[in-house]
Amino acid sequence: MKFQNLYIGTITGWVLIVLFEVIGAFFGAWQMKRAKIPLKILYLLMKHGRQTLLFVIAVANIALLFNAQKKST
Image (cartoon, rainbow, N blue to C red; front, side, top):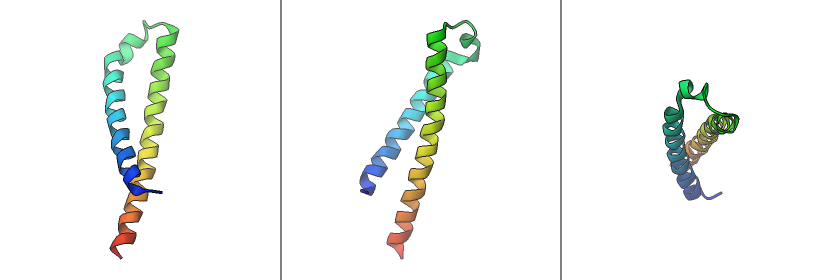
């Protein structure tokens, strides 16, 4: 695995997290009560996608830390 790609993927992941947060703030919980079913499904997919993306970023950060520790020894 090339760790350069892991750095780029982590940065891209954080940009997506910020994008999901902005979209989530735009929708807001009070607007979801009035929303139609397709918009509610999109909001839930975005919410679960954000959580999954955070988990993937955490695993990538652990891999990067282990790689940095291995290089320093």
